[in-house]
Amino acid sequence: MSVTVRVPAKVNVQLAVGAARRDGFHDLANVFLAVGLYDEVTATPSPDGPRLTCEGPDAGQVPLDESNLAARAARALAERHGLEPAVHLHLAKDIPVAGGMAGGSADAAGALVACDALWGTRAPREELLEICAELGSDVPFSLVGGAALGTGRGERLRPLEVGGTFHWVFAVAEGGLSTPAVYREFDRLTEGTDVPEPVASEALLSALAKGDAAALAATLTNDLQPAALSLRPALADTLEAGRTVGALAALVSGSGPTTAFLAPDAATAARVAAALTASGTCRTARTTTAPAPGATVLS
Image 1 (cartoon, rainbow, N blue to C red):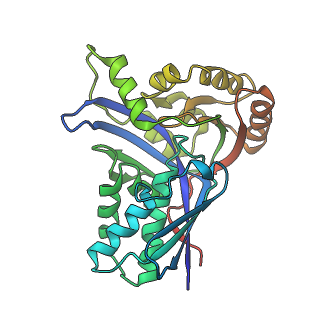
Image 2 (image 1 turned 90 degrees about the vertical axis):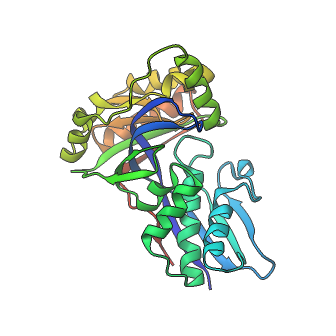
Image 3 (image 1 turned 45 degrees about the vertical axis):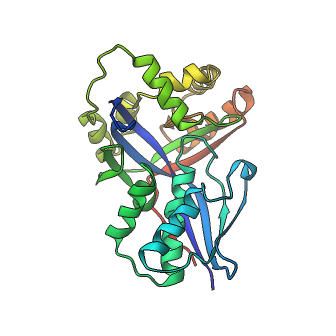
């Protein structure tokens, strides 16, 4: 048998970043919104032990060894239940690789859910979330989807109400950006300054709850954006190209280099995507909606 799980990408509609902690992480107020771009993770028994394969855009950039979060997720679940991680994980990628949309984290959450179903471990949701938090800051949200406020380093989640559908365009850049490199640049840019404690914006949470795209656009923030632009200055041209053709707001998605554009409706989103693709400032542009469900078993 095999089990296939679909997992969503995310956009950070607010990413407030505190100063570096002693452990090297940063405290965050991270408002996650799952969006309708998905990877699919298929788990199949593998008598030869753990194996990882991948297909899709930029699949060649995905590591297929033990450093891959999906492989680490399968091993972590197996160890907790006294099993051998005898599984073949196949990743069908549609989330941009190294694009600031948590594709690797999504694959880890998908692998956990798929292996739990394949092996019949019946791990409670609390255990899966605990493993997710051990794997990475974004992995728990990839499991739950919807919208949530992440605190700590982003792994402690509080579900948020979303009162409607939001229309998004994502411009995919050439190449990726390393999340650790972006955080290092954030630390360099803020060195010697008083970095405030990260706090969720009440106005933004209210806009989400009301489904008010214009109000959400007025409150979108990403404290990592200056660092991402410092490392990839050309992203500023992409942001400007989207703003000039009708996007309500534009920002770098997470650590980048994917850029996100909020639109008032589907027609405007399609127009923004076409203009971005024609602008030559990005490789391609994709339209989708939010919120989206978390990790979901398809078969």
